[in-house]
Image (tube, rainbow, N blue to C red):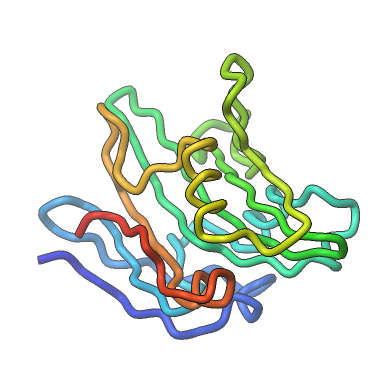
Length: 181
């Protein structure tokens, strides 16, 4: 039986807030899952302020209104661990979607930053809009940034979450993507 936690606090209240308490892990899979109606509960070593700072594409982050849409932790057998988050933000002049990541066990790459693939011309780690992105534009961005709601081959999903309230506020409807249960 997978452990599911319902989170009820608002994302805005999380920025700069203390880190969350550890989530229980499922005994069979080791997977942590959050089904959130808004976004405070993250793995204990994650900090919303640090994630959002990695998504900043402006010199004035105080003018941004970010929403954390989804997150996951994956790991392979090397072990290579990757933490990823999907951020939508509103700022003067438009909106942006950013895919951020970090390698939390690598001292050289522990900080959150935009996901980039230098040898793939079609890859996008960030996309800006002069309007609120539509659901179809979000889906196009997810494809362009290689965001998956299931782990890639050879990777295990250690934890994941999708923030329903953030999706509803951003797109006017409940999430149409989810992680496997």
